[in-house]
Image 1 (spheres, helix red, strand yellow):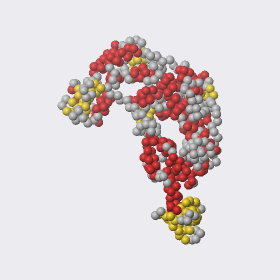
Image 2 (cartoon, helix red, strand yellow):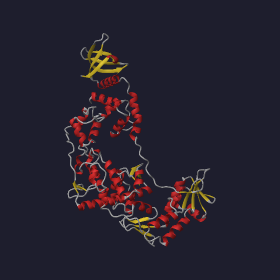
Image 3 (cartoon, one colour):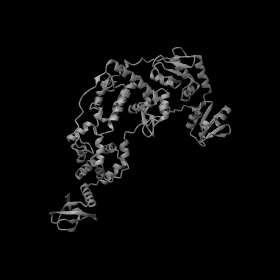
Image 4 (cartoon, rainbow, N blue to C red):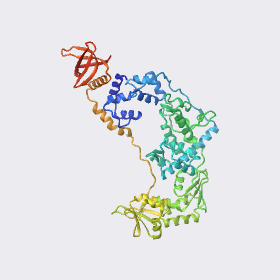
Length: 564
């Protein structure tokens, strides 16, 4: 390793901000628990051949071109302040001399391909909305490989969110790249942005999705203007990364799902529809050009005597979301069908709806009024709702389940599906150590007419939706804070002395031969050629190659050291 480069990098690290150091450590995937003592340790580790090879292989084409030419801005950990790469970086580049990405743009899509892209954009946006609603009810499991769990794949297929369980991973990946889903504890949760997104109009949904997707694209396929390069060039974006081509294909697949590239005779990224060009150029998407080709949304449905609702076209998103909170959607075609049951109405009541609110909403939504059977179902379910009450005993902090229907309470006590709650008979009520909310949702899932009461005995609507916490902006800085503080604490004012001692320690360990310049008491200096043998007590010991004797030199008198 080039010791001059190590020292230069250590000094650059000491002068860098905590944020820049944390960003570098994050890019290099350095564990926060690494045992570095000072910036010299850090510099040597970061410039180790294996570490540099990994770092260089992850660089995009244009950055490699700058490094090969010895040009460009400083890249902390790879170049000096003038942008010249360190020796280990030049060695890692080898004979690779990539040129910068050529300019170019995809050809405009023809009319048929544009229509297909619009249909795909609409279908994907609708499917993502259904996926978000599904994930709000129950998080999606994530296995060790990063794929969606088998049970959730089947659930997505059964709910007609995807045609085939194998399509689940791609849709979830698009939701994550679009900022709608977040990974937390080996599962996907809806992000705060996703919870708000699902109630937006179709055009706004698509616009937010594709803008977030563009912002998530890897650096190597992005342009300085904030857009992306021609997708036909993506395979060459990371020339030294063998794992990149499959990843590039996956990103193109997500772009295709979002309707940003069209299918062609040679590849799925042959051309682009008109609404994608502004995005590619770093501008806002042309939503109007897409909306012209989308199915017309409706804001009313037909309510049937058989307790179903039929939408004559795609229902406006906000109306669809609320209707799905009251009824189960049975078909996902443009003319969707929804079915009302006692369970769906009870679920809506448990989520905070009221009978009056449900009937008023359905009356506004219906083209034909509210049929008597549906009105009767809502009122009857509302009358039974709250027959089972869940409260918290303030003195014991135990959860109490009570009901005026004692037969129903006895049924709950012996219900095997509720066995995990540990319900114990206590007079005319049941007690358990389980949390109130957990008891409430277990009873609701078992289709009991349950209501939660607060400490004042008032009905309280519980929100089951699980939304991911907002990501902290200072994640890397916070994670590496203690490490950076330790490195700064060990970097004293006399960096020259610290570096000299490190050089001498390395020489002793490797039994290196050194040329040592020593200041003498009379103000002159003398150079000794020594084979370093020991270091301690503030002195360097070694065999003088010229006089063939052992010498001991005070470290404080050493002016300079050079490898022989």
